[in-house]
Amino acid sequence: MSADTPKRKNLGRGLSALFGEQQGSATPANMGSSSAYDAPIAVASTRLPVDLLRPSPLQPRRRFEQSALNELSASIAEKGILQPLLVRADPQKPGHYEIVAGERRWRASQQAKVHDVPVHVAELSDSEVLEVALIENLQRQDLSPVEEARGYRALLDDFEHTQEQVAGVVGKSRAHVANSIRLLSLPESVLSLLDMGEITVGQARPLIGLDSAADLASKIVKGGLSARQAERMARGFRNIKRPTRRAKDPDIAALEENLEQTTGYSVKIGFDGKGGSVSIAYATLEQLDDIVNRLSGGGRSKFQIDSPDQVNDGSL
Image (cartoon, rainbow, N blue to C red; front, side, top):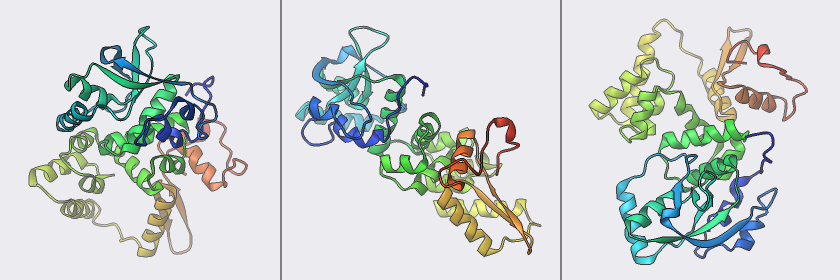
């Protein structure tokens, strides 16, 4: 987000009004004065021809299931569009509009031979369009696991939300957000299988951190393995790769798991019988800053990091 763009806190809490989640459409008045926004958003309600609308290039969703579009198209043909689309003036084409939320309804309307659709026209910057689109899609819970994870990551990295804030906005637990983001450490080939529904989250999660994750994912697909079978296979592979490693003390392992659930980051505890160390892995400086804030109770007084040059590697 650019420095000259004012950041709205808790943006997602106002989406129910902005998107007209209730059975009746939200009015311009209540949409423009949502208490969830630091500043009001100017909104106008009208109807627009479908050929004046285009999908936003900032839309995080890339895949639309045809069967779901067919069902929605049939519903629109019978009952019309009950929930207006959210649009903004197209910055590239005067007189046209860019869809911020509601691309599925727009596609289904064209399929149903509907020529114009109800819309709410809002004044939104590029960064606000992306944030609204991410949160709207995440709240509707119909993204693929990979799209969902990338949505969470974008909200954390691009909009400086914490995991707690993201969880609160989309109605998920912080642990769910953290575990979802961990999926992005898998190879792209595995993420592609997950995105296409060839494997499930339960089958993919045991592969996190394995060098042979791509090969094991192929075996899961070819063998039709269940999530539990995939977990056993991954566990067996880890045991083969590290035959001489001493089994970790169950109390230490439990502490690691508890810290991971609490922080949302990968935690390793080293203990030699007398003392040891705690390592928290991170991938970006934004994540490091989040960890520092957690350790210092929200402040920076104890753990001040002035530049990336002070960071030696990806762990604390």
